[in-house]
Each structure stands twice: as structure tokens, then as C-alpha cells.
Image 1 (spheres, rainbow, N blue to C red):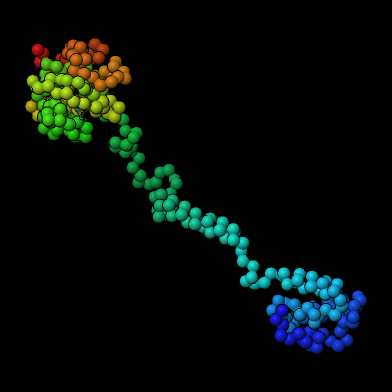
Image 2: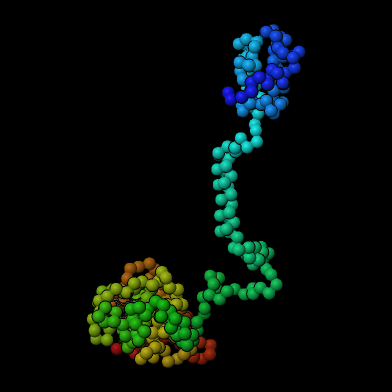
Length: 309
Ligand code: HEC
């Protein structure tokens, strides 16, 4: 206790007549009143809010104890600035604030109108399907020129790494040439064989332009669509020194031919040159109807390509 003026309890705050007698009901009441007076008087309030024990308790141990209880209870009242928020509440609130800020920050998209607007269409919208988007259907290629145009892009994307921009391959790396190759535009070429080379890849020895190659061409059937394969082959057949499709209206290797080869051969490992040669060059995966003369009177598209023998 640090009350420096214990005397005030008796002399100032408690009138003479109210001084508690020794013990009994009266003294308790008087004590109580004295205590209340002390507590209501800010001047006499000690640091802990209680008068010194021995000064205010002439009524014996019991009374003192009850006094203490009362005073302690009063003291327990919350006071401004002395009841901090429980730590866990602060943590939870802080966490929620942080999360909320993070969520807003990452999902607001700078509150741009074109992001926030949830209405389906707005004036001036271009409602056409995006070109080349996932919903765009495969292009229906018809003429050699159309295949070559698409094929040039596919060749640059897929084949050029090995067969090179000039189509001459890289013999030191076992990459055979497509330019002037009999498998592309010559005696060994056919839509059924060429479709299989690209669909399933090729390994083991193969002779190209009088030279033996023994490399690894990976299968492309999983990553390339039928029209892309037909386009890449048709591009190779009609580029550099190759002129395999003189009739622009009737490309030999079509999307339909690649599709038919894929369906016939199913799932399988890399091809070998020996396996390819078991397919006669006039063999076609396409049904005969596909080779019927066109309505415009053009000659039928032949299954085999290039000069034989
Ligand atoms: C990773 C390298 C690589 C890529 C990519 C590649 N090839 Fe090949 N290609 C080869 C190799 C190696 C061979 C020879 C395989 C062997 O020795 O059996 C070959 C052989 C061929 C042949 C038969 C032999 C010849 O020279 O005529 C053709 C046709 C062919 N590739 C076309 C293509 C086309 C079309 C593409 C693109 C769609 C393509 N290749 C992509 C490596 C590749």
C-alpha cells in the first residue's frame, strides 16, 4: 500500500458521528459507508483504490476480510485503457484483414470495368468466334496451294529442326533430306507411307538419295492434327526442287488420307523402312469412292504419287 494520507479516511471522508464503533452490525455499516465515501472521493482514493487495511478496519478480522472482499470486487471493475483485447482476437482480426487485402489485391483486376461487368454482352462487342481459338474448327483444305500455305507454317514449327529450311536435312546427324527424296516425291512415295512416317515416326536404316540413314524420327500423331500432317507433307512434296502435285486441284496427300491411315494402323510403334515397303505404293487407306472422278471432270486423285520404278 502506498496511500500517503491514511488519516483522511477518518478525519475528512467520514463524519465524526459515523465513526464505526468496535465490532457489530453498526460498525460494519459504518465501515461500508466509509469505504464508499473513500471510493467516491477521488482525492482520497489510493493507487489501488483501497484505503490502507489497518486504518479502515477496526471491526476485527472478519469485518476486515469482508471489507477486503467488497473493495477487491470494486477494484476489479474495468478501467479505461487497462483491458486490452485478448491476444487471439487481435490475431484472428489481423489475419482476416490480411487475407481480405490479399484477396482483393489479387482478384480485383484493378477494378476495371471490362472485368467487373458481368453482363454477357455489351454494345459494340465483336461476337464472332476468335480465329484460331479452341472453338475454331479445323480448316478444310482443298487445293494444293491451300495445303502448301498451311504446310509451310507447320513445317517451320515441327519439321524444320531436323530436315532444315532448305529441306536437305543434316546427314551428319542422320537427318535425311526431304528435298529430292524418293520417299517424298519419288518411287517410294505414297499417301499411305508418308502419312505413317509422320503419324508414327521412323527408325532403323533407310536409304534416301543413295545414302544410308539410321536415325530416330519421333511420332507426331499425338501432337499434330490430320490436316496439319497432310499439309506438312504436301508442302514438302511441292517445295525446293520437289514438284509432286502438278494438278493444284488434286493434292495426293489429303486430310482424309491421313485420317484413314490413322484409323487403319491404330496405335503402334515407330515405322521402319522395311515395313513401309510392305505397303505397295498403289495401296490406299482410302475407300475407292474417295478416288472417284470429281464432279468438275478433273482426273481421279491417285493413291500413289510420283513416278514408279
Ligand atoms: C526430331 C527430328 C525430326 C523431326 C522433327 C522430323 N523428322 Fe522426319 N525424319 C527424321 C529422321 C532421323 C528420319 C530418318 C529415320 C531413320 O533413319 O529411320 C526422318 C525421315 C523422314 C522421312 C523419310 C525419309 C526422307 O528423308 O524422305 C520423311 C518423309 C520425313 N522424315 C518427313 C518429316 C516431316 C514431314 C516432318 C514434320 C512433320 C518430320 N519429318 C519431322 C527426323 C525428324
